[in-house]
Amino acid sequence: MAVFLYSQKKRVDISSEKIGSLICSYTMSIDIDKADTLYYVYIGFQNKEYSHITDIKSVMFVDTKELSQFTSDLKKMIPEMDEKKNNFEFKRTDYVLSKYDFTKDLYLKETRRGGYTSISKGQVEKLIEWIEGLQFKGNG
Image: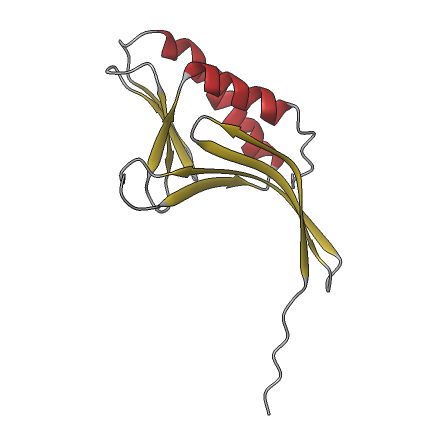
């Protein structure tokens, strides 16, 4: 005889937003069996390396310091997006933000499994505004 036990989890989307190619959500996940709650910010996107298959990539934040670092990096990229002249990049554990000299757009790359998307300056500003309005309750 085999007994399989599965944890019961409840997921509640506190806030969600579509910003350009980004699907953003602030979620509370409750492990009912353990009475444990996890808050996280998820940013998902279709990998632009592929146009004929669905390949969703994502960056997820559970730590307030990491989300704060991401927001700070985005803010530092905005002045670089005004012209097509500079290459500029932030490499972090879970993501890379890149600005290339051939475009004004910002490239968001997932570092663990590869894949990227690009977003405009206006979309970066909307993303920052959405994140700063969350009142994030993550770790740290």
